[in-house]
Image (tube, rainbow, N blue to C red; front, side, top):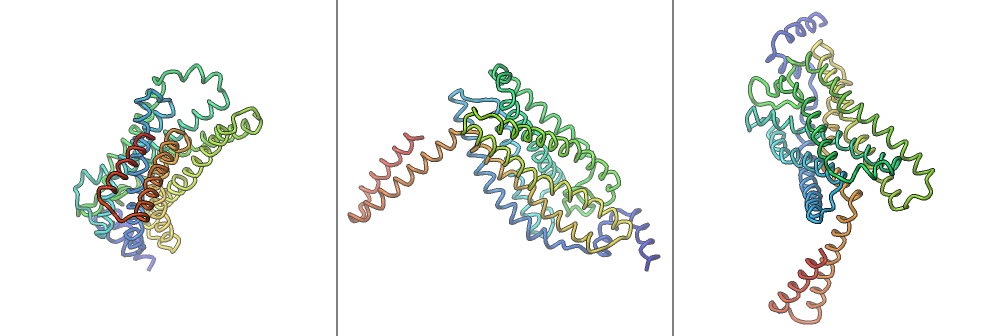
Length: 362
């Protein structure tokens, strides 16, 4: 049996097409799980991501007309754009997994879809890091920051640097094929034939794109907590918002980013071990866990809009005003139905009056 495994491993290394087939035969993993789990997650992320990021960007555009943009607004806008670029690709991935992992949209669109996931992932990490550092400087060194944040030029330059750094990190990924030779599978990483070169690249991008920013954020928020505890003269509302922002960013990193990077590297290592002839239940469990973390990583596009609520009081006020107007309109409509027969003309007058009140509040 050992001799057969060694022979199989040698043949597997020399044939890319056979590698894709034989590894699934010798060490079968639960490929049905991602076909059921990921489409449901992607559908939820699509709906929440479009709604949340669309609403957040709409509020930023409304604020820009009033001339009330800030450095934080610029960073938030870039974060929303990164989320929307990724969210629009999710319906294609839903189709892919519902079709039993059969890609119907061509080789280039497969590459672009996988690229936009990593673009969103590392752009989100980059801009969350910038937001955290901005908050840190504003709380720890408020007087120094007061004179340096009067213009938006530094924020725009920082945004360009973040996008440039992310694209530079992802550029080597263009070298690696995303589809198998049959043209049906769209890999989220790459095929088995490129694994020996792909694994070192992923380890490097894990360090530069995730570990270093994560350590920066931990250092910033640890110092922020110390300063907030010592400073008793700070505005309680500002202190509460700063604490909530710190908690949300740490949750995003702990739930969406940390598990994904751990299990992505473990999954690539497990594939390498499988190519060498190893097949254990642990390796199979790593595959399933990696699929779960892929879904968690995509959730950041639907959770990022929460930052708009914490960082922008105008959005909260507008949402409350809109909800109150809608509730008031609904109550008036119910009262008119209870006290008199339904008259289309009266109903039209009531709805027009309530819509005018809501638009005036907004």
